[in-house]
Image (tube, rainbow, N blue to C red):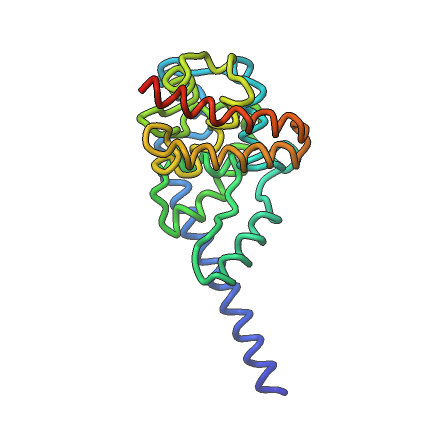
Length: 243
């Protein structure tokens, strides 16, 4: 029993040491990144440099809801890390012995895009947690979601919601229907697979998932979901005819 106790204590101490090292690496990466662009300056910088930056109030409610339902349904209710999603992702990754899920919130995805362009090593991934709290201490949830929608990639060369809505549908972000919003909201998960020019069938299948998530969290009814899905075949024909 004494040997087992010593092994347990040793493993516990090593685990704490490893976590401390990882967070230390993350802090160094965080300080380096924010020394070049302070978190408090991010939104002003995006507004200055992104053509047609779109403010929160000028974005369709359907797109806001579709994005939240799909990417981070506890976004408005949670501060900081989503421990539920992180735990679920950890268990799934252990069971599959692969990286199937990351547990990243919308805020974390925003920090990845702004500071690391999704090129994450272990230090940058740990820095993400410092950045997460920095963003949520300096911006409202609406502002965080606004920034996210303005820099996320929607495939086919469209970065940001303005380019995506005008490019795909010739509409402003405020004018999106439920069908258009739910279709767009599914693309950032895998833009190369879901972009409409080459992955229309997959995008429509993904749209079904988005609509189901919207129904599950209470944004739309089952009837609205079914009515929207029923529009897919007509859209497919019209889209391919117009190419």
